[in-house]
Length: 317
Image (cartoon, rainbow, N blue to C red):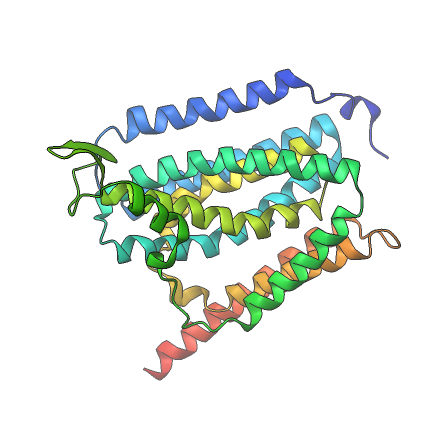
């Protein structure tokens, strides 16, 4: 039985403001102190940042567990793991975008910083809209569940060799139609003034593609977390920590796609499981403990299978 003293802290607006200010302070410290000048983020540094963000996420989970009870602590942890695992797929897509536009590694951190800042704003709006819909119309969860089943099946049956073509991005086409774009980079600048007037740089185009790509990925991840909890603060904070960890994870994982070959299969099963959970919630409630165990089990099996497959392949060669 939960000690009533541990679950009496109501989430009010000062908690939201304090959390957002804390995150903005960390981001300002990152860009203004640690990455003031363009440089290549090395693996050792990326590992340190990834460890820091994961550690902060786990500490926050402990805080939620202590002040809001074990159930919400487990909801945060499950939501964080689901969002983080779905973000890993986003890492490889971002790597393709950088490669396509030939963006030097020393400028990639700048794009990811502003891209993630934009992603936080978009996720906040989507979470608020989704939560408002669920509060008014409980049948929206059924739609979310059906969409996750579709997304899971789509991921499972999409060929691995199907490549994303950034040039087909409709937002990118629209931007190029109305704004001139320079043919070369201008350092870390997104906008420059030329003889013909104000123009966007290729770095700005990459930022636009990264933002729109994240929006597409959010269409899967946001409904997925509503299958775990409908508490706005838990949904938002778990999303924020997962997204912040994504940037440092990129510099760790971007060149290791072959070590995660079965991750897509694992993610498809996770989405299908959460979709089914949402569809049957009216008649049968799956406990958070079970959800957390299933998600960790699926991801663990897919990662182990990827490692084993890669190891066997290396032995044959």
